View 1 (cartoon, rainbow, N blue to C red):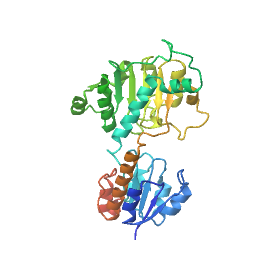
View 2: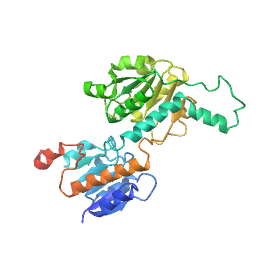
View 3: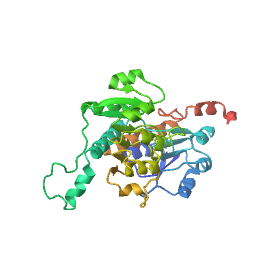
View 4: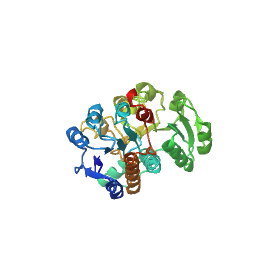
Length: 331
């Protein structure tokens, strides 16, 4: 019977799918397994179900001599050495589509929270500072008629646009390739990155982490934003230069930021962003609803089972692996 190692406790529905098709071992801790544990488990495993916190590098992959599939319970896959997996003829899969609404909800929640200064207001009440109604107390920003700049009008970016329309916001977007059909369906207008940065009152990031998007928002880009603008990041931490963002917030280059992702996760206790009141911080919970996390886990399990049964999994992120399987000598 084939063996599958699951790096974290996932939804029971997903585990049942896996257990009907393989012998399943699940890491029992609340934190990610150590690298040595993953190496030991993959030595005789055909399937590996991972989370984005698991760094599946070449060393781990090369210890998995029998690996058939690495199934990531996430949309992003920058935690996996896809190139090495492909050369080894290993399927790599992800879970797209099922987390779009949950992540868009969180992104727009962060936008509202930073615009209306909700964490500040909550702390103000809880710490006994509220002495009475004040017309100038904790003034925030309206959304109506403001411009939302979306960087990356993919599935999640499109959902953000739909939500923003309900708040009567103007929508512009930037991505390397213009998408006239998508912009028409969500009511967004295309802009260059420079134009988006200078015109937007709110900027929401929805791009994968690649060599091109690392530090996409740095000192130069922050200086091009309005001083009254807010930056929201629910994509990946390294897309934003954190040090440059901190300086921009302290120096009043922009008004505020809301972050669900960070350069280092979990965020270090001495990160200076923790001291700023004009920043809303959440612990990478974009897809953290019971329903969404269950759907993601089930999809990852289905991807795994397909691969174990010698079928091409539906959510394959390295289609080039099919060429390697047809011609093993090309490795």
